Length: 321
Image (cartoon, rainbow, N blue to C red; front, side):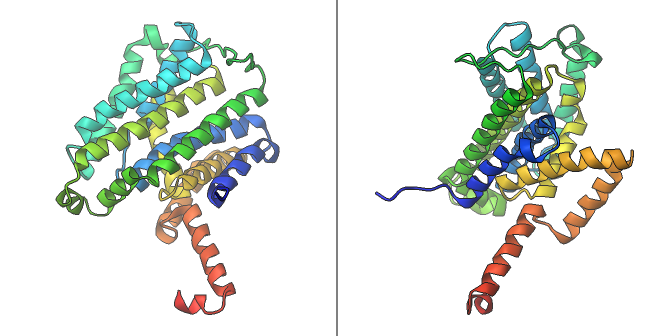
């Protein structure tokens, strides 16, 4: 049997995650990048995989963040158990929201996810005795992992976050390459035809919504481990907007695009904020340019450029292309 090697995208992603702490100015910035890359993956999975634009991913990210914080601080669970349970809880919440939201299409679906996101934020504020309200959830510990690995240094925290991020990305790649992912692609391209072929498109969309919500919840749990507390803006509508912007910048057609978009946004925010307090205007202009001239995002544009260079380097291939 011939040995199986990872595809170039997976290998490149693995190397990039391993190199981030050494390439970026601080390990903290690298940790922020992998956290938001995981959250952006949830948007890319829906938008690129099945064609659903959701403004509710911040709700599931916030739910995972608060759930993990409460489990760590009040329930006394270990890190692994808290991350797992908060991820599953966010997936269950997303399944419920998706079951209701996918009954509508287009702008009505978008507005339903937006409404649920706003409801989640105000619910957190209303339950201030439990969640901390506007002050956030503070005093969240970082228990050691099984085996005695203590999360008492930025490097140790990043190592755990990197493993979780890569696990989410490889899971998303596996799902999109599976028969289930093929059905999602068929729904994205022509939902009526997929229904005519006998697929229960609503059930598939709910399943994709739950999976994406679970990944967002995982990102929320990672965010809690990263910060050691849960700020209320974790579940604000702005978080959903930020994840969507990152997905569009990187390119929603591939899980790797989520990583590229999140990394670009986090690094740009770090450096542009020092140059100009209104740096979000520059991000807005960049987003407009990408939508107009690079509809597949930075990652998609890079793939197209690489394909053209390969075609030009091989005689006869350029003419066929």
